[in-house]
Amino acid sequence: MVPEYKKIRLKFQKTGNAKFISHLDLDRTMKSVLTRAKVKVEHTHGYNPRPYLVFSLPTSVGTESLCEFLDIKIPTEDDHTDIPERLNKNLPPDIRVTDVYIPETDFKQITDAEYKLVIISPKITKELADKIKPLFSAPVFIEKRTKKTESGFMDFDITPYVKSIDAEFIKDGELEINTVVSAENATYINPEYIIKALCKYLELDLSDPNTCLYTVLRTNVYKQNKETFN
View 1: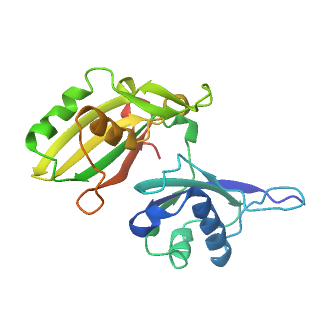
View 2 (view 1 turned 90 degrees about the horizontal axis):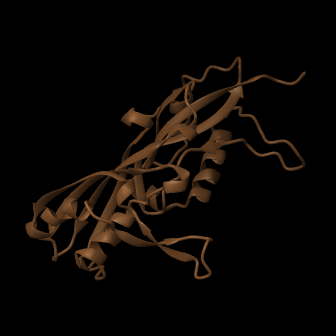
């Protein structure tokens, strides 16, 4: 008799040193942890069956996130409420499952993502911070990878897909940017495009690793009308 499965959604955080692992490594980690935690999940069919995992909107290496999502299918009769506790006992401390539930939405409904960027550089002044929001009132072109040109790159205007952006001057040498950008497949905006734009248009130099750094944290994802996705 073919077992029946139900879909459940895991919400988890990926912070600290976990930001340096690739999406492929994250996939391997979750598969291993599910096995160690003895969570029964549906497997793919064929000669080499593997746990069937579906992630939403993977982050780039170096990006932290408070809102990652993973869909799995478990036997219908199995209780899922204790899965976060079971997984967290086997996960590294920088990856934490914070919630589990039966989803009522599809990952395709995600339209936007919110990020907090913190930039540290001796070049940062209040004058520079005040220029950031006005910068995106006009076209801002960055170099984006594409399969449509022979070079593999194209100039892409990101302004229509930066839904909101605010820069807060913290002190000389440090600022914080909160931005909401498009997360749809055709118009996905990597938050690091914001950093590239500042370097290109405001001549912000982040080339010296001894004095300059920036961090990127995904804080939320949204459906249409800026409804929080869950």
